[in-house]
Length: 107
Image 1 (cartoon, one colour):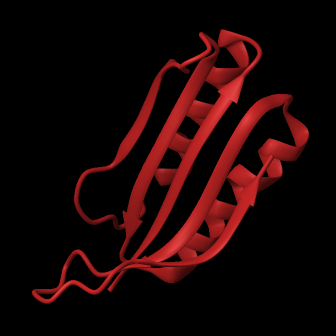
Image 2 (image 1 turned 45 degrees about the vertical axis):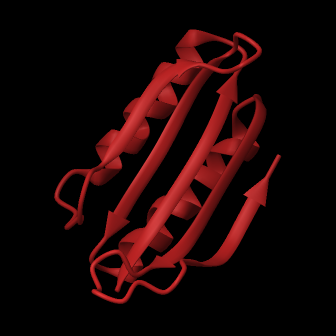
């Protein structure tokens, strides 16, 4: 089993978007992850700066730490729209049951 954090965040300014993306990348240093680690920046459908995150960890504590960091930043930074979730992920198993969302925060 793996422990996944997914987020889709939209910001008012490119600087705030850059700051969040770098904060997430810094938090991943030294963590054991599985599969593709995605922290990508772009523009949302409405043209706002955005950051997308998908990370699968080997340890539940690392998932909880990143989830809490993103959720806290969503409260502190003026995110126009955002969603972050954590879930149990079975992509490393042969018979893959569906992922189970444990918690989700939407703003």
